[in-house]
Image 1 (cartoon, helix red, strand yellow):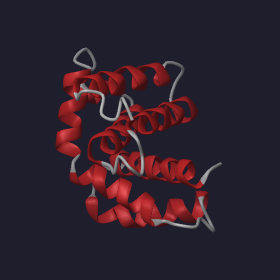
Image 2 (cartoon, one colour):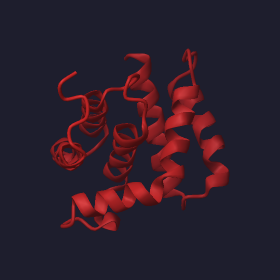
Image 3 (cartoon, one colour):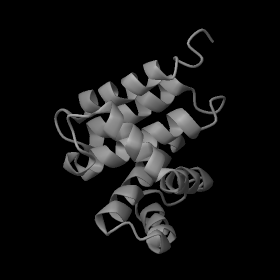
Image 4 (cartoon, one colour):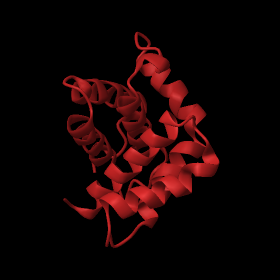
Length: 145
């Protein structure tokens, strides 16, 4: 598994645990450290994981509003914790990430792969639908690059 993909997996698992345990920001670093030790010992760079997880939490209100607006038939509380956090992570990379480092389509594809690996049977399609909608609404950045 490539380092970036593994890092995203660890960030998503950490966000899942953070969300499941009541969104206590003071425990995030402890959760991340535990997950790195368990799932990514010897990982070259851990900064990417921390940047993703903390970026999602710093922008969670904006991200959740976008999810609610892009999937109006699915209230946020009814989206599974796994799918909800994959969407948050994918949206964070799509909207707030460095597009030179992670192009929008890569962010979407990575989120879809996480959904297929960790989510339910229809998670990949659901994540693709929500992120694709947002991507089109923001004008398909770098479409011609």
